[in-house]
Amino acid sequence: MTATIIDGKAVARLVRERTAREVTELPDAPGLATVLVGDDPASAVYVSSKRKHCVQAGMRDLHQHLPGDISQRALATTLEELNADPRVTGILLQLPLPEHLDAPSLIARIDPDKDVDGLTTLSAGRLAQGAPGLRPCTPSGVIELLDAYQIPIEGAHAVVVGRSELVGKPLTHLLLRRNATVTVCHSRTRDLASVTRQADILIAAAGVPGLVGPDAVKPGATVIDVGIHRTDDGLRGDVDFATVADVAGAITPVPGGVGPMTIAMLLQNTVTAAAARCAAGRFASGVAS
Ligand SMILES: Nc1nc2c(c(=O)[nH]1)N[C@@H](CN(C=O)c1ccc(C(=O)N[C@@H](CCC(=O)O)C(=O)O)cc1)CN2
Image 1 (tube, rainbow, N blue to C red):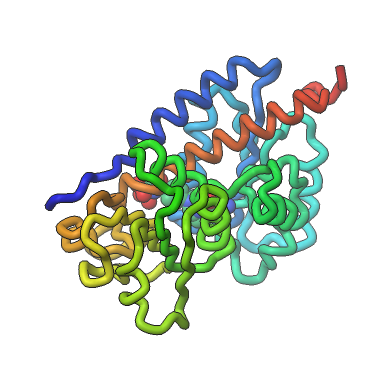
Image 2: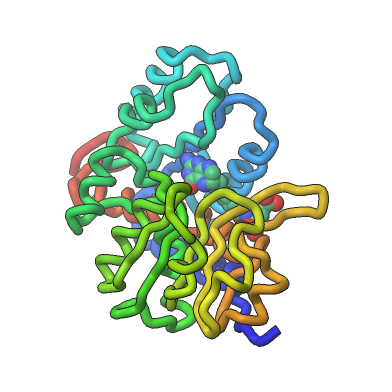
């Protein structure tokens, strides 16, 4: 193996420490409302980790666990209540939702000023136009990792495999803002490997286990694996780590790569949202000063 292993756990720890320091500079502790619907085991793991780190960073844990058969209307009402609650600075609706619920229209209910997942239409529009706003956590975690390892983005050819609202599309905008040349690939891309082989920075976010093998990677490229799949052999990503690590210059592992950054950037977004509320004179007490 020749590649540098990008240690997402270590970078995430630094981001969390920075966030905890920023919390102490605020007049009021930020409050993060995680909303978990149903009992999906993976979602339960992620939400419990978000809550643990939220408390460790000195924030209020304002969790809501709702039944899996909750109606669209009742969930929308819960989100409206969280919008109105002055203790809540950030709202996170854990995805995926049970099939009977319409996620986009529920996300649309979240106050964009509390949208610490960066998933509302307004947050997406702000990102696309380069306006200040809250950015989706996994894509901003990828940028943070590249910066932490001083991997140049400006002028690099970045190839993003996957066009989801959660990762592929927002990451494309973040990379463009940093002056990368960006190519987006998806399930209809012809001869995927011929495109990914051109990448200086290759980001695999397709949701297909082991999709990226050594023949799809330019020697020395940076490979960021956003995929996470639970298999009989444990967790694995969209990249075949063992073989690609012999070709890449730097690579994220799964676990221990991008995943921990998702949670760290959520905490960072919650502090950013809280600071913006303070600047606007709206405090947890609900009283404008
Ligand atoms: N509302 C959202 N839902 C989902 C998001 C999101 O950003 N917002 N992302 C993913 C899941 N996710 C966070 O919610 C997430 C995924 C993975 C990890 C992580 O730390 N993974 C560890 C392994 C942990 C394990 O599974 O045992 C790692 O990769 O090292 C954190 C958060 C979908 N839903």
